[in-house]
Image (cartoon, rainbow, N blue to C red; front, side, top):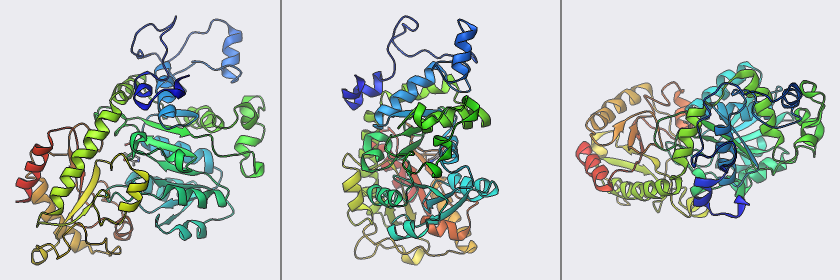
Length: 456
Ligand SMILES: *Cc1c(COP(=O)(O)O)cnc(C)c1O
């Protein structure tokens, strides 16, 4: 019934019906590690997956289940699994798809933690990744190997705010017989629903805009139900072969389309590795979700205003905001983000004093140059220039987070992307003077005035 309700209605109501057990108007925090069974027969059924329900909070709590259902509906998906963090959401989704010596094709333009996961930990475990420029559609297809099991990219990357051509990459994935997994943390389902454009699995760091207040870590994986794991059964034994752990049931037959992936994630990967979401954090994210549309729309509008201010500032060499005409991803933003462009974007200071004046075309309309390899000395010089601006800010705070109610600033080269190689930074479009902004809910004039005084 709730699927027919509007976005805003779903974000405050979906997944929770006060009833005999829970009569509070707001979902309660089920702060218990485990649950009492009415009989041993019921316990046996729950453990064997013959019956759904709460048994132990590593797998699920009722608070978490409300969150899962609500995010699944907001993304237009079938089911969701909520986990301890966005990092865990990416790891669990990709392990469930590729965790048998599989291969992943992923965009260069990824969150630093995801690059670390794929490049280091997954590689150590024998899960390999080929990184491609996400805008080079042919490169996605060329990178496919016989054991490729997933394509992975972000709907809107950061700090450079490249907009993914979801449809084009989904088509390439499906031609290769694998699902497209999209990290929609920066996009949010209010601005873009990747599943409507062909993505099969959507992951979130709910820590960011879904929660929206910077209080709690959480992650969510949504199965859109679009990918048919039964089509090539030998490729997906985790879904199509008898699962010894659960009395030889076959997940694809038992759970079907849209449920098998989240069931595998919970009953095997979260169960075995333990990145469980605390009921308290689930509750914090639910509270934040109730205002998702109001916050995201307001933050996007303010960010557009801030980007236009920065675009005409003489100290600024480039503004990476796809809402600006002339930005390389402006066309894709118009296609995929008709309600507004995310509030997470970046700008580059001029790297030297003598190029302090904007070129004739204006700073932001200068095309994004091909990634240039900067030296360690360039980065040291960039750090000094950026520090003078960032340390002068008073309203905008220096915090390594995004999607908070407060406006936050970060210097990717010395913070979130500090341990990347010079080549990886160039591939992601990060220069020595790239400054990331996550625009919050303050008065727009205060944010602009603060940036103006700091840049001066
Ligand atoms: C923050 C972030 C993550 C990781 O999420 P955590 O909740 O910090 O673990 C993953 N992807 C993107 C795009 C992020 O911004």
